[in-house]
Length: 433
Image (spheres, one colour):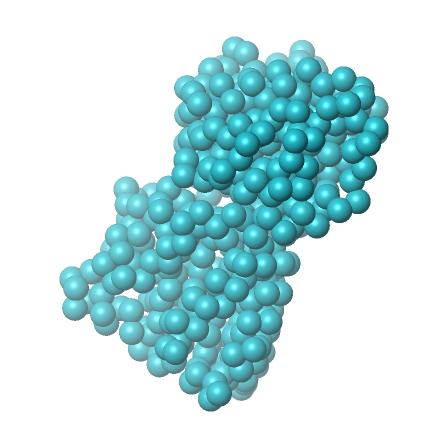
């Protein structure tokens, strides 16, 4: 195999470890349904369709009713649970309607019913339920502002929770007094329950005042829709009830279980790389920061590996998990993983037997159909032959077009999981087997 094929094989092995189906099946092994009259299933997220299918495989006709909202193209065959598609990353009318239906279904549950909630990354955008007088259009505008501002998901979701009737524990509040079991795939560093999909079943640790402070941090208070700002300001003054906190009695009847996180895919990548003969080293499971700057630091280790054999001797595979951000200034197309790979390509130009792979485990990177990209020491030379300017593409945030021209996009389609991003640095030559 080539170094490129090897990197892709390691990535595919990591994806298999994060498949939602087996994770859901395993989590349900000890759930006792005998004392529940009805089992209702709701949820949202990129992997929640696969989770719903797996749940039906275990519970079958024991499920009375269900509704799960997924990103376009992420449906799965189900019988008892209705799956609907909605817009992501920009919310749309379909998501608004689905969120309302989910709240109604959860609200119909009684104390002797069980509400199972399937949560995965992407659930925030897929379930817009703006608090009046905020409109969907204003929620869309707010989302666009944050997507261009290089905010973390923690910051974006803190604001989302305080503009919503669904997020920040409010779905669990709607289901009360019914017991709630939430099965969660984490796409957030550290697995904070109140951040994953904006924590619809978790106590919220943020406040209206903090949401306002986040707007100010990015200079967005003057740019955000006026209805949003006024709503947050009113909440900060105490004119609107806060999101449910940890001391709220409703959470005594709520069980939140993280059934999968980034550690699963990182460890699977380690096993596959070691099986292929690489010396492996896990750099971090919390890689973050501006994509292009983080990439430069990441690939500097290639030179250190060649010089000193540290942190791993060649053939080496360095592995990281996490999620970077992009400050969008250009008008191109791409995502954080593709931008990471493009900056890496510039940094490793001319280096033989070095490859970087950066890809999202959900199969989508930004508003594109690619999970990410691969780059090697020859990428810039090959690009020049095709009249592709790497530096200009980076400045225009146009990494998708650049890697499409090279045939170096990583495309997986829906992956049935969503467990943050995976970053690989391979330093050869390839192991002899």
